[in-house]
Picture 1 (cartoon, rainbow, N blue to C red):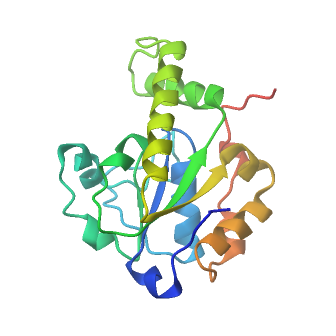
Picture 2 (picture 1 turned 135 degrees about the vertical axis):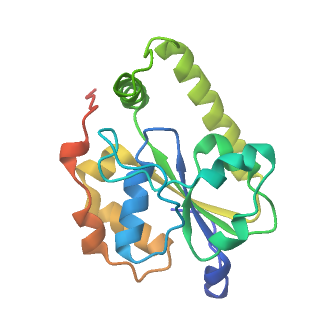
Length: 202
């Protein structure tokens, strides 16, 4: 559970961020929050495909954070937007951010990423798994440091593997983190184990 929360009066001004490494379940979480009753911010430019049959829930403007462009941020107050982990430290100050951070087994992240590259016709071996894992781990460390230093950020960590395997208690936890009022049954309804395709067991 998060160590701190915003007061009820702040919820309408709070920006909910779904984040995590690529292929960590962020699109699934966006879908869950959408059917649960929250308004999401997306431009629908990136269409669903074999890798994300239910859609990506992305917004192109978000990618410009790294260039210092964040004119979209005020529009996100009271809504949910997907911001990949590498872009989190570029979010501007002066806003309350509520972050749902997705975690997934690194082997599965790498396998899913490689499969997506293959589907796009790119070379999946251009960067080795070892190097990519190092890049991802470094990014996660940087994000941890950034979040810890932000007084205007609250977070909830969600493990994708556990969400698929035993979703109900995690959905309840998410609902509580969001202040309650979400439709948990609808959220559970969009979790499709058949889409959990890059699966590793220890």
